[in-house]
Image (cartoon, rainbow, N blue to C red; front, top):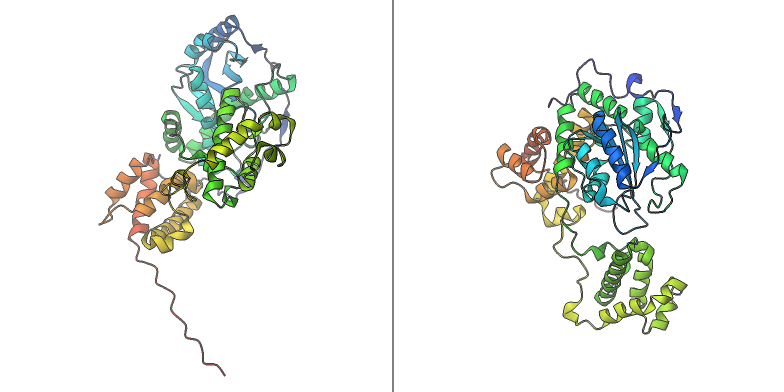
Length: 435
């Protein structure tokens, strides 16, 4: 359904029917209790048989150890299906024994909340998603003010989820009982939430939008590796000389190698702040390095030769091999520079932003979901050639990955923005003569 205008019978966005939240009933533990953690091939096969005998969509979630481990692997997989029950699967010791579970889940619709976060680590284990429903993305399309799982469960189901362990170190063993309770609750009512969100999407005329978005998320490839990732070091802007930038790059690369080798989050190996401090100080010896904050700690003293070796390599580089101060040609210039560097693009961007904001208000969907911000900026910068046509804009949006519903909404909008006459320059005002 591509008509973005709600029917007249639909309550207004600020009406009591829409904004009034139901009374919240705490959901403190799963109805059937916390299931045991499954760790062995035999336990996996038992779960697979039960899941295959269930019916309807499958609720899935994963727990990772972001901020603690380098990898994005799943340290726990939570699954629930009607007629099957809930399962907590620890895949660490026997990841190759999950074949039965993988087969049982290849076909039914998966229900995930923020699927972008979970699909990569599930694929790493060999799981295959044939059909996806993303409750968080559905909430975004509906224009809900808060789309985290707890907020949406409260809004749609009137239930209050236990919170507090999502950012924990899930690589820890054994996992505490309260963490397992939290993990099981994440899939306890996910299918019920899916049913409620699906009904609201149909009522809003956005069910086909959602279907296209879910399929896009399910099938999109992994993004290519970032270029010069070391340039994302915090406070890099305070490093002024190219020689100091080289020290940052060498320290970052040395830290990256160690983080991968030990599967530890890079910031726990060596903080960004320490890298920047070392680059600015450029210590002459390893002893000088250990006098700097962080590097004087017991753990960093043991790695002092490694870190100083990186600094020494940077000092030995020829001038031609030093990194430039700016990334140079990577991405678009900052928007505040467009007016001077590409005034036509600045005009297109201003008109497009205004039109998208108006469309967002009318259909009740955030601007960033109507059109990917990076694509919007790129097409405004590049233009579509002359003369500007609807077909040219549609083709450019298609190449940029915009879905059909986005193209239908945004092509006329962009055409109007791109063909609007330039805004007149403000008239000069003559100063009145003194006295």
